[in-house]
Image (tube, one colour):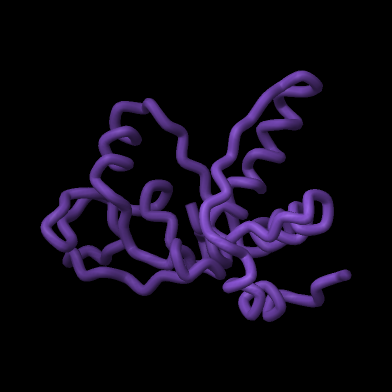
Length: 139
């Protein structure tokens, strides 16, 4: 999930990590909302993750404890974007760049021989303005 500037900063979009159940657009799921149920502002470097809720399927899987959801900040997602681009020649979108960061964390836990699959959906070229706004991009 998009931790944006950090969960404690309030500038994030991590509804599964920091939200609570509610109804938005007719779907009951985890949302970022105030005490009256009004939707809060969100933040993520990734436009596709900058949303105050998730689909009800993710909420269901979270409640069943079938999936662990992790919040990844903007800086870590952009670093993963740059690393993948430099090492693999693949420019991932910022949405899966959050997953790439967490894949690196899990890879260190698994050690040599461990296997991880990450789906790289989207194209990173559309995110270059957002990436460059986070700091210099090396050649």
